[in-house]
Length: 323
Image 1 (tube, rainbow, N blue to C red):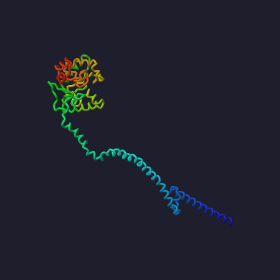
Image 2: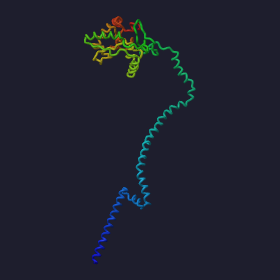
Image 3: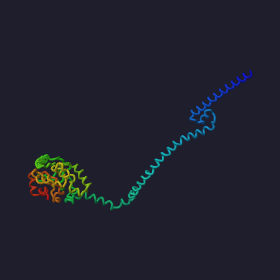
Image 4: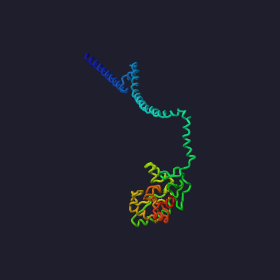
């Protein structure tokens, strides 16, 4: 009987122990799970249970401060960029300092009262009003200050355009149909000799000549450009009667002195007059025509006049008595 009692008591105690261990493991599992739910933060778990409340606030403050440090460091780096840009901003006033020095003459108000300063502009203005434009040409052959006329100049039935006789700015006849027909006739005959002529530049407007002349001036200067390019309003190409002639597939000789040495150039020089064209700027006549020799530039004047000029070996200016 005693053995049965002892056995029963042990059995009950073992059962209670098993239940206790089971409850303990469940509690521990719950605690671990709880802590895991709080990102394994024991302090946060304890605060939820009500333990360590006095220690929790410092931890929260630390967390917020720690979490805020990256955000505060990033803004701290961002202002550094504007601060680096400040020196250029400060340099701008430094660049403005020279103008401040230049403005110093403005403070010299007494100079405004000096009488010699006022007459100076008056002396420059007087010639513009009272002095007449010069009538003699300059070194380049132009009459400086000359105004473009309202009508083109025609002498003995021939339209003239050179450095002394300009054309109106609005004069725009286009390419002469008569000159084109004469050139086509000449090109057709040249083709029989195996020469394929072309007119690569004929009529040019006033505005186009402005662009062309300025380009040459920028390249070679005014004095050099005036020897081979006409100023706007003075170009013979604006008449529509000037033809720059070359040979097809020989573009390297277009507007080149060497064109006169080619077979095509020699043929044109010897036969152009028969179709009403003259070599406008012959060799050794620059002091008369105002331009250096151009073996490619021909001017249509009609067959009779062209033949006389060719046979007499003179220029258009000499034929019209302008020289």
